[in-house]
Amino acid sequence: MTCHVGIAYGHTATVAVVQDSKLVFCQSEERLSRIKGSAGFPHRTLRYVLDGICSPGEVDTVTLFQESMTGFVHLHNTEFKDHEIGSYLTPADLVRLSDIEPYLTNRELVERWRAADRDYFAELDASPDLNAASLEYFRQATGAEPARIRRVNHHDAHALSCVPFLFPKRSPTLIFTLDAEGDGLCATVSIFENGHLRRIAEVPRVSSIGHVYMTVTGLLGMRQGEHEYKVMGLSAYAKRDSFAPLLARFRELLWVDDDGSWKNSYGIPAVRNYLLQEAVKLKRFDQVAGALQAFAEEMITKWIQAWVRKTGVGDVACAGGVFMNVKVNKEVAQLADVTSLVVTPSCGDESTAIGAAVHGSLSASPELQPVRGLDLGRAWTDQEAEDAFGAANVTARYEIRRPENINHAVATLLAAGEVVARCSGRMEFGARALGNRSILADPRSERMIGFINDAVKNRDFWMPFAPSILAEATREYLVNPKNIDSPFMMLAYDSTQRGRRDLPAAMHRQDFTMRAQLVSREGSPEYHDLISRFGALTGVRGVLNTSLNIHGEPIVGSPADAIRTMDSSGLRHAAIGSFLLTKRV
Image (cartoon, rainbow, N blue to C red; front, side, top):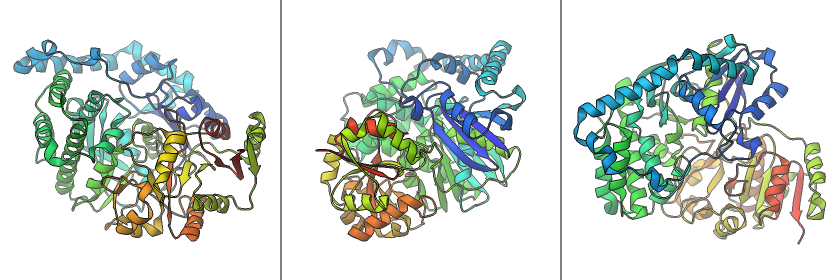
């Protein structure tokens, strides 16, 4: 048995395992720490891996998600401070004109700043003491001998995270990475072919559209590094004519040349942030969101289109936190020259653990088996669920049944207008709930939106819910002429007339797009069966699906987490393993 472990140890700390050329495990530390976006080193998750999947002696490689020492310095700053991802801007974070005015007119000063910035990181990476301390820390944390500990460039880790999801296999594949920054870069273009990744372009971090999006998110009073999806959801409410001047201003700050290279007019991040402050000051919130989203869609599609035409490779894969933007991904999928599109699921830094494990595996063998489902986390038995019921004295508050067929029982409740929490099977990796840790409802009834928000979610009023749709019913509900699959909720689609009729509670209420999960029998057999039974009862082959968690908490992991969520919310029904729990009135 060969076993390759990948570790992301910054925010959203995560561990992944590739065993015998197949991705068999991936789980973020937040599922065990119960702190959303849990940072630091994923000690709890790695301990689970080494106790239950592969012992330290069976681990061939341990690959870390970043080459530079900056990650290790960050780790030391957060090691004993499990905390959430993202932060709100404060007045102290705003940039004063006096701070950056010299840089507006003096190009030599800009170049000196950038040289000093490069030197700082180079000095960190060259420090013998820091490198020695880093190696010793990771040796102790992982139990691996130094010879087995490796580092992979951050953007290569993003790029390689696509590889387990490239099915059917296509060669070559053009892989784009795009995030705020990592190892000094914000974007790369690579070609993956025959088990090898070859980088053909890269973009320095100063030209990061991810940082632009994050900064404007913060200027809107939202948590930057976390709430960018809220800005994306809000953008559909803005009329293009109303934000055209602001869109033009964004284009003056950062743009893509015809050859696919990113350029900027501000030189250094502080100037960028000041100019963004000035650009959005006193602008309506919806217009800001609309301009920012339109800017992202325009620049990213121009970048990808240029490289597809330059290389002649139309099979595209994308990774990195910016591609969590499902509406950008929708526009990429619709590009005429893009033949196919794969987006790494939950493609923020948590997915670099997958790429790191893949990097270790490919060093031993160029083959990697495709992955159809994301049920890659810890599983729980019915006996463990019963133990959790006893520990929480569940029978005092819930009626507990064990139906002959739990999927049929849940489908019947959904068809009768009930909302059901489902905690079943292995935990699924990532930020998207894909059925195993989900709140499910009838997508025909728009009253479900208010009920779920009031009972548990407390979502912003403009944010939509999403559907899980049987893969074989895709054309009934979605406009998808290229048959681009989205089993992990990483793309938005336009809806058909039937989709708008059957799934009104599970789409964006302004533009009628859907961030759909296409559920196959092969990828999610039990969830597929449940939706099929709901379809047999109602004629609708999809359900409303949102994550099972209290607002601000991670998605639930264990039966005990599910019970706490039920106790803390207005939800009445929960399917936990083979058991159906209903609150006593």
